[in-house]
Image (tube, rainbow, N blue to C red):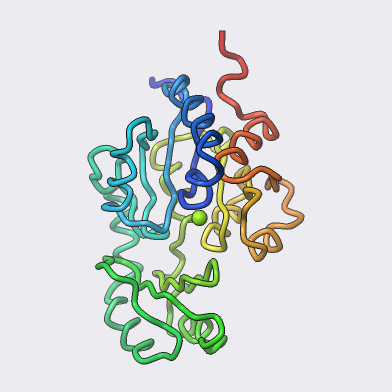
Length: 248
Ligand SMILES: [Mg+2]
């Protein structure tokens, strides 16, 4: 039997794993590299696979074991990018013909513009907070989708019941990873579902206020004063999850 990891780090990228100063990022990445065989690293991000590939080409950037990308609608092996079929099939079934339906619903909506790129199981837009009718997210949900707005910039239309948190839980179960060794980390509202899983987590110091407010009072969520990567390191101590604590 394979030894379970000491830490499962399931982290958002922009503003979180990529957040903080250069030296703060380096401190986290070096720590992870030294103890890499004890860590199962999962990127849980709104970004798509080509973008993540670019990041991973940087020298010294930690390579993930798995990726939950596209706001939870892509679940793949971190190296081969092979889909985790059981989960990807569930997402595809939930989405059905969602792309054309979502675009028909939202076409010509003032304050919305489609994000460039082709996404298999989501429809993603940029929005202008001062222009967009605040009823739009609810209208999208009434049409049978999930809808997440975050960072005053992004509006994502997702398959019902699919987002970062539910996809991560399915992946943990599929891989048999221990939930009590998981730290989730994020900085914007598209990370909220990670903190609603009940897993231990960290809202990093540079997080948007809406996420801090939405996670206020959740006992398993640490609000770190430190930004990005430094917030993750702080939370590993806070939650007693640091895989190097009992190192020889
Ligand atoms: Mg982020």
